Length: 125
Image 1 (cartoon, rainbow, N blue to C red):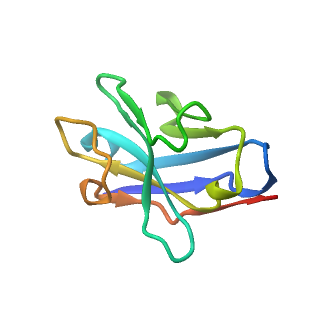
Image 2 (cartoon, rainbow, N blue to C red):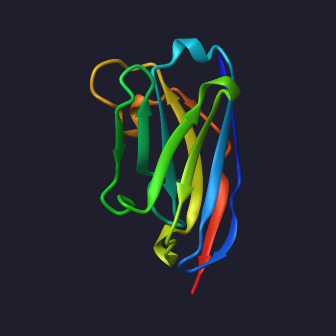
Image 3 (cartoon, one colour):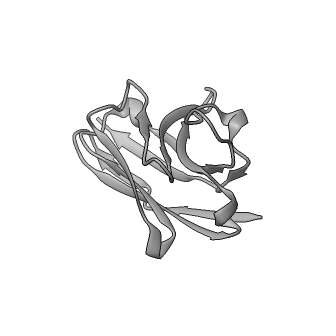
């Protein structure tokens, strides 16, 4: 099993920044990639960014490309999501997830087996 704990969410004004953290523990060696997803009220959970360990391949959704950066620190078993130039449309609960899927970088919720509890991000106007 893999346990994931997100932190770093909060309330920020439009144009502000936040850095989310995802601390992983357990059988992380069995995983291949980490993703960030978000869910706004009344909407489905959507892909934000993903990173694959081995090839360091990274992918972002079009809505966050150029504003968000996903990264990791192996020694701390932690993955980060730096969010800049935040907009009200970025509001939602942000989830960290890990996947054991090989091949193409996973970007759908079904491809991820382990999930954190989520952290709330609210961007005010």
